[in-house]
Length: 86
Image (cartoon, rainbow, N blue to C red):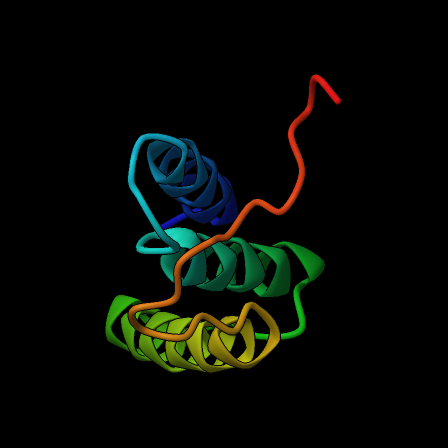
């Protein structure tokens, strides 16, 4: 796979994220863009199987970082204390 295919796939997954509630595809999008960036810079030359394995690892790491940064408590309800018209 060429590096630009990974970038396009990452952008497509990022666009798909706009239509989903929560952060479902954002980790995958970040992982795909990172793999595309690594291939583009020439730091790594990998087979397709190794690229997919790297994509899986980077997506998992991106998801874990997003989970820590964008913390969401299950059952959390947004409570409004003032009206916008006040």
